[in-house]
Image (cartoon, rainbow, N blue to C red; front, top):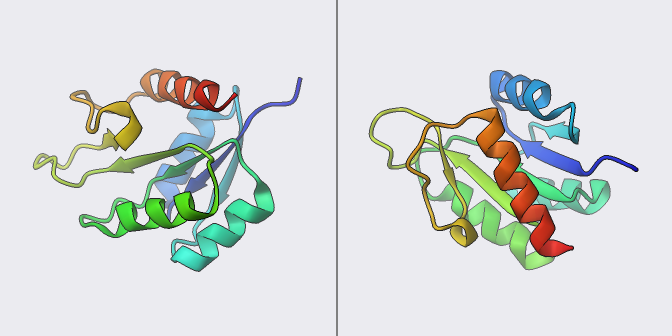
Length: 123
């Protein structure tokens, strides 16, 4: 059985590496450092991932706007990793369909569980 594809969008090479290593055993991880709206939508259209992770870490609304722009063109599930509004510099997960910010620090196992839930909702 083919691995599910996850597209990770980030300009942070450490985040790309962290997610690639952490998720690579269970998923086909595709990385892009393109973060402009049109570029990301084009990559999503070309690669056809099963899920998109936005790990842009912009402390503002741009990552949410980018997620909404992707949502206009596809029903692919999106998870946004952000330090937006945490106040402590820690990475949090934000996904409107998953009750907003989770109150724990990001771990690979927690992220894998969330990915599995989000992909299963689509099937």
